[in-house]
Image 1 (cartoon, rainbow, N blue to C red):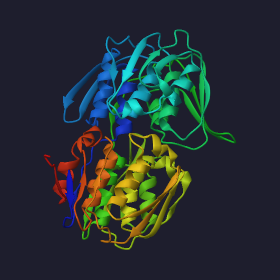
Image 2 (cartoon, rainbow, N blue to C red):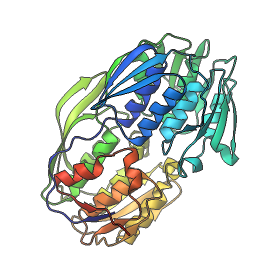
Image 3 (tube, rainbow, N blue to C red):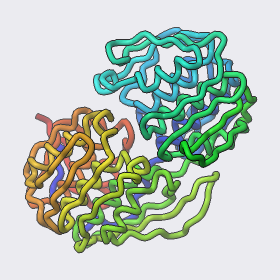
Image 4 (cartoon, rainbow, N blue to C red):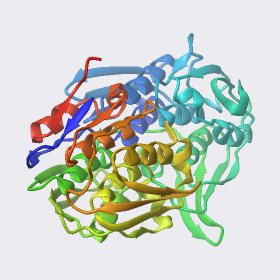
Length: 441
């Protein structure tokens, strides 16, 4: 795909539903007794694969069209053994949450994914699941394809998450649902809390306390979850792309409505405002226990580079690639530290962004746990480079946004992965005025 410098981006950007909440809606609906109704579900491939997995475990998942879905659940502990392999495609969130969900049921399931997912470490999930009595058999490093043998007589677990990871925390909590007694998860740094909020919404007994050892989450096992009606807010990680593109494209004014602003997810927007971005919140409100607002982003030629606090990393871990694009058009250095988790995402995102930005004329310094973008100011990035995406949707979309404001067009080697999280990206950005095309080479 090629992205070229465009005129002002103008209009309303209706981005898809939140991916994190979409995954969890399907999973918790499948673990409830009765019908859960979901509106605004993200229909990207990652979430669709989670829906197929819930069907494989015995739930009845129905697409009624226009983002309306229903899930007839089988209850906590009611999962059936799937007949085939569970293919989670590109989704690290999907596979890790599903592993946790089935880990304390007396069934066996084999998981696989695409080349990117099969290269990602799963030991961070299988190690804590072993505390419940679950067994796992995978490739070296606990990589997929991997077979999980659920615990026939699960015991509750107490686990301190060694790295900031909402996926690991959520997998342990979901496993704890079908274990007797209390499962306790301790995280030293707070991560996105959609799982905790939604578990309470579905009727689980869960408490959160701040203690010297960190954030202590206690879940009482074997509840009967109550089906819910869920309105999925729009995804802040998807909103990041039209928002950030508007900030760097001269004359732009873009409104992105109904965006979830959960404080464990909104770190990017806080950071952009600290850099001097013209980014405002309108119509602030609460929907389904989640804070929501409309975001208005305007061209911001006077942004300055900053040092992003490492403690903020967990609230914006997926947004660092697109932040580094904005940083390229700011004045001075933007320093991003405490981000080694990016090395084990769909790709090594630090390396992918560093190599791609250098190919387009931006100076980058990187370490194992950080990288620094030497900003060139508004309109100062040359462009003209070809960027490898490594089958990573966020890398692909970030470089497409770069090309909208560079002096020369920017190309990526493969845009196919974009459909995993943001299937309407091309049409939406094109409707705002972006100039992108698919190259048939």
